[in-house]
Amino acid sequence: MTKKSSGTHKLVTLAMLSAIMLIMSFTPLGYLNIGPLAISLNMIPVGIAAIALGPTGGAVLGAMFGITSFLQCIGVGGTSAMGVVLFEISPVLAFIQRFLPRLLAGLLSGLIYEGMKKLSNTTFAGFVTGFSAALLNTALFMLALVLLFGHTEYMQDLIGGRNVIVFIFAFVGINAAVEMIATTAVVGLVGKVLNQVVLSRR
Image (cartoon, rainbow, N blue to C red):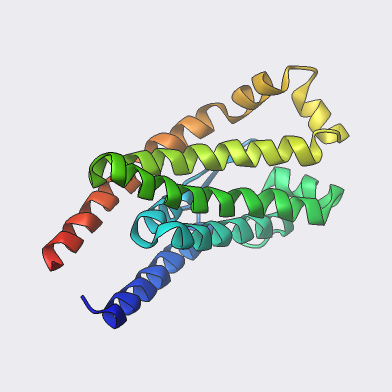
C-alpha cells in the first residue's frame, strides 16, 4: 500500500467512525439512561479508532464523544440529568468534565494498543484496548467529576458522607460493568477483523 493510498484509507476510516459516533450519540444506540448516569456504548468507536488509527485517531473520536456528551447538558441529542445540573453550576467546568476525560481515554487507548502489540499478538492487544477504553472513560470521567464538582451541594448529596472511592464504585455500578463487557467484546472482535484485512492486503 502506497503512502498516498494509506493516507486516503485512514481518512475514509476516520470519516466512517465519525459518522458512527454521531449516529450513536444522537440516537438511543449510544446511550441507555439509568438514573443520573447513562450506560454509554460510545467508547466502542473510540476504541476501534485507537486500533485502526492509533493515538491520534483515538483522541479525535474521543474528542467527538466529549463534545456530543457536553451537548446533552443543553438538551442537544438527548438530555443528561446530571449534565443539566452540572451545566447550571458551571458551563465551563461541565465542558471540561465531559470533554477532557473522553479525549484522554481515546489517546491513551491508542497508546495502550501500540504498547500491547509489542508485548503480545494483535488480537489480545485489541481486547485489552477495548477494556482499557471503557475503564479509562469511566475512571477519568468520575475523577473529573469529583475533582471539579466534589465540593458542590449537588455532589455532596450524592456522595452522602461516604468515602469517595466507595462512592465512585457504588455510583458507576452496573453501568460500568455493562460498558466494559460490551466495549471489550466489540472492539476486540472488530480489531481482529481489521488486522486480518490488513494482513490480507500485504
